[in-house]
Image 1 (cartoon, one colour):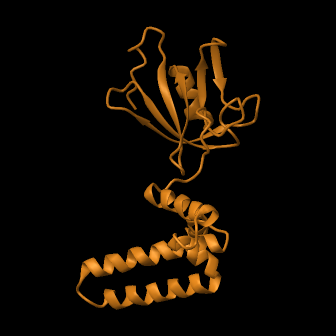
Image 2 (tube, one colour; image 1 turned 30 degrees about the vertical axis):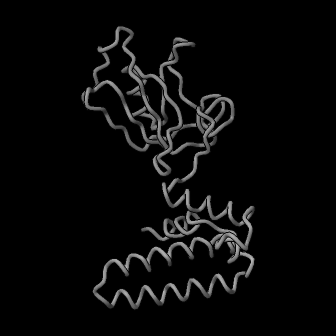
Length: 199
């Protein structure tokens, strides 16, 4: 890997630390050539501490190591993206990230939809909110809706109308997310089961 440590007069380049699974950015540190090499050799992320004026392996005091998974160099060869598996919180203040964000899997729109479902379940008027009304009717009604939508998906899969197939698929996914929450789970719980089956 061709890394240009000479671009800055102090020989340091930024190293962005990202969780390899959740893709959450955990922190930003700086590396010189020696810190980079130690990171590669030990598989524990090591920085050059500008405060301590020495190499500093993250976790050397706290035990919250950043285990190296992968390193990517940017297009100018002067910034690293380092993917890790963290042991414990990353920030010295005890938070998952140095921006106090929770380090959890984020599925973009789907995660936002899950949050909306949760909000409707907890706060919405069941006479005005479809989601709240389903939760009020209980698990049997929600499970029935998932079954109905699954049948609709099967029917449309055998037809040639892609728009209807996608529409029914969206209905099925939506009601399945509701069913998951009715059972006390979220999509990531299912993802973890799938991961455990990976060989």
